[in-house]
Length: 273
Ligand code: SAM
Image (cartoon, helix red, strand yellow):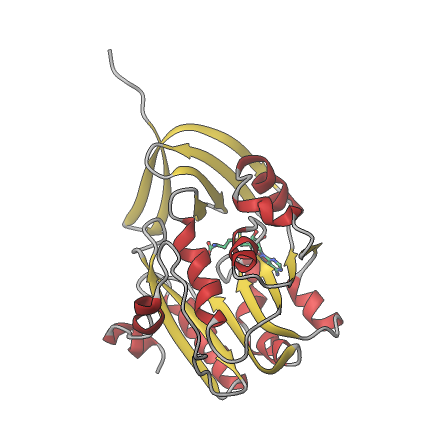
């Protein structure tokens, strides 16, 4: 008898894809913004995909969420008021709560992502039950244009620069972001796989450099994202300096990573030129 195997594949290029053997597909919906799929995988637990690209898995989400929150946390003045754009799974907000941030606003365009996370990732999305987290279902670009609030950190935890997230990588958006940062505040964005998505990294870096005098790119190893090497780019109106403060360990993040993640391979430096 032949066993039937089911697989979910994310295509990186015409010639390469990463496949996860799955036990089951738990959900597939088309929302006003995107297609959301949820799989129960053998190796990575539950996996959330948007428009065919992996957003998070139960097993390795900690790397992305620690790196997008903890790295910018330790620079400049201690943040107390943080805005997340995207992040409908609740993972970034959860890490900020671990850092004792008292005020977190999370603007996610697609309420369906939040509902899926609440049902299938209760631990990760438990942040939405915390009184310190204010969830707004709406477009981050519109929110930034219309709101007058200022934040110490703005975390752009978005999908890749196609569809609803495209505008989140433009210099006009970063220009609006600047108006919402406190004096030495920092904006950080996920900027894609340097290997497979060099354009996303170049867009984020160029867009931020046109608006901010200080821009830094750092990388992390995320096994379920294209090529495993992922980039983040952060910027500020003031020089970004580490505070003299004890650095807590995460599961991936520690003081070595805080320093070391800014040492970039030559091919990544060339994308930033
Ligand atoms: N860790 C992820 C990654 O890099 O693959 C990002 C995860 S999070 C689920 C991304 C979220 O960004 C999605 O839920 C998507 O709906 C949201 N998003 C995309 N464009 C947005 C916009 N313009 N405003 C607010 N949220 C947006």
